[in-house]
Image (cartoon, rainbow, N blue to C red; front, side):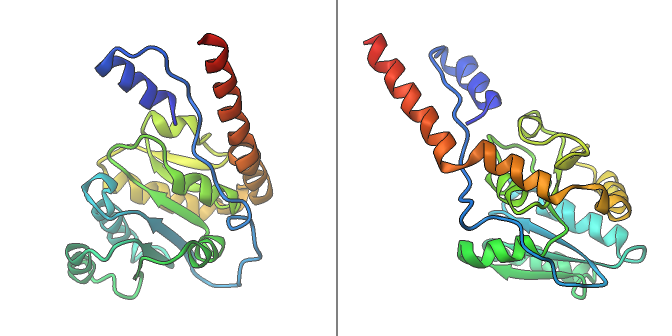
Length: 216
């Protein structure tokens, strides 16, 4: 699904006959919608809430910001008791809300009402929630992973942050709050829909299948 994953497979297994076909986004569910008026900047984080996703660093960044910005953060994914305890420890109960796992229809509406999605992963092979957010016209704030550079363009559909640094993440979030209106939601959504729609990705599978038939 990415050049990063392809290179890892080639390096580990010496398999050179690889083809990159990205993941898809369901544009019947993930699309732009009118945001409700609110005085707070709304962020969303969607993940499995495990070590890989580094959600605790996002909470630590929010703690650093809580006296300097008016925001809300909504967490969608499996309930993680240790993260709930961290929210209490950092006294973020009025800023951070744990929503648990929901179906895609509910999730898409939550993304549509968000100003940005935050994904501060330690490692990834793609990042489906990034293209889902972008398809809704929502920019993303992400860790500076090589694979994310295949999806995100700095200042166009997202912002990169140095990894493993809650202070740096807090600064980038603070900067986003100031500059959030610089992002073009319609352009972000159109680009994501064009790259990752079912028809476009499906055609890549068809082309690959035809090429395999020729090479038999």
